[in-house]
Length: 170
Ligand SMILES: Cc1cc2nc3c(=O)[nH]c(=O)nc-3n(C[C@H](O)[C@H](O)[C@H](O)COP(=O)(O)O)c2cc1C
Image 1 (cartoon, rainbow, N blue to C red):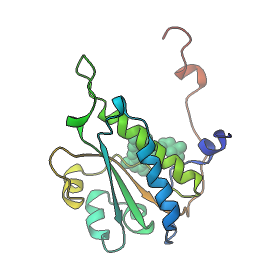
Image 2: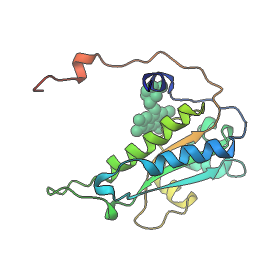
Image 3: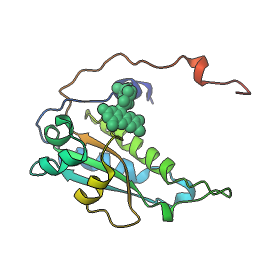
Image 4: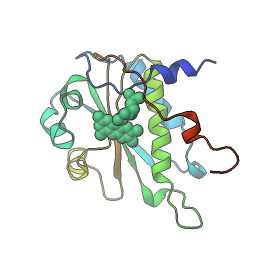
């Protein structure tokens, strides 16, 4: 199983073709979100999928980039339900960890299907609550367009191995 190629291939896509995604591909990408592990298997998460067509103006209020509002056919919104999440004994709520894992599953599945994504965290949360009609208790945490890339990968700039990996102690 060669997963390393998948990691190499994923990059933040900030230009998309105006081309539909096949329904079976879309389904497999969404299934990856559901199969992800969550703390105590609580799955305190949910996903809103919105077609960009006809919603461009609303999406612009959420995050104004053209590559978000109107190029790819879909925008996906990863949400948490913090009240339903597992909480560690010291009070640490794991909802954000759960959504990050599930969203990354989805992003990697999209990569495997030849589709592009870009994590978006810098959106307007108040606009997102309105546009995606999120009920109380549901928090928008991450978003991505989903579609075919019209962008090209850039070299990956990352910290050195020794800067992030600590042997035995920090
Ligand atoms: C949690 C998270 C939030 C992000 N938010 C944004 C964002 O709001 N806008 C954006 O253009 N990129 C956003 N990014 C993309 C990062 O800038 C990008 O992943 C990073 O620079 C590494 O580049 P690469 O994804 O091409 O490897 C976000 C990434 C993550 C993981």
